[in-house]
Length: 153
Image (cartoon, rainbow, N blue to C red; front, side, top):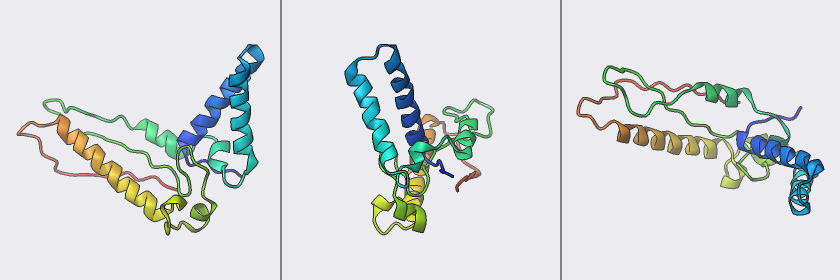
């Protein structure tokens, strides 16, 4: 079983696959070679590139269900913001970290372990809340309650 827990890496593989399919229909040699090189790279080490080889996870699909709000309407009393954090041991555009996946460690940030991902989540939530508040500068604006829906492997 090859887990997927990084939607950017899955999207990258799917995009390149679609580009490569076009090679049969007259894509120039440079583009075809780029596709071939990409596919060789992700297939070279199946252990450290699982997030490229799988498909979108349930976490990705759940994230799509959230429709973020920006500016609240006059009588609106609730709103949603969202953020997506890739899975432990993965980073967009990078080889997967077997150590990060296996141990969940964040001794080094490159392992993309639990602590690294938690720090990333806190930064992104803070950024999303700040942006949301920036769109809602009314003197009547007040956050009464925050609810987190956290989906993680």
